[in-house]
Image (tube, rainbow, N blue to C red):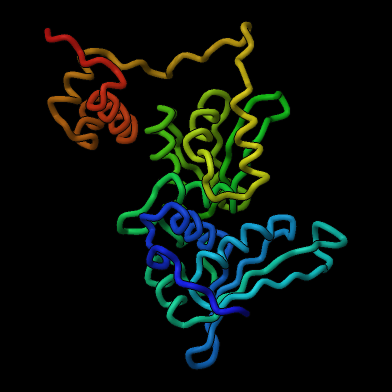
Length: 277
């Protein structure tokens, strides 16, 4: 384990894109364990084909870390070659824990940080760790997330709604209690283009898949499904007058999320303001 040079930024400054991405990847795929006294360890085990990402984590971390590899049998493959990044520093572990990386089991309890953080980089971290990017069997672009965390699922829907305008209602899978969140076609293209921007830190194979989605063009004979409920001018006027998505949702009989997205679009000029009566 070689001594690391300090990063140009403060370690785990979540306003820095690379640290925001790294932190969410650690929340999703990392394991923080306590030992006797002040001992403990943070580990991240991934497929060995993605070891370059762990080397980037090592470069970004101004503490002693190591990367080990092993081959073993699993329930899914007779031989599985994995790489594991290890961090033992108490100071680093304490910082990560304070930011929201729990010790022990955490799949349902992880949540976005409370302070300022780079949002799209954070969300790219969860997609790289627990999501998928590519094409469906029908040949449609898609981006999906599987998560047990209500907070993470809600935040992705909130963010994706602002980028694409698509609304999603969270509902746990009855079989295993997991949320499965999916965006396809143009919605997937828009969200992927925002999350996987040029030179961003990410798993190379998912970045390559993300970049390929831009080539898809909707077939001329593929109908565009209409909005479930189009916004009327009078509703826009009520929304602007009330200026509160929760209150407007009750008055208009719409979801709070749809009112938030519509209000944001009106304020930012994404849609024209309603004409005065």
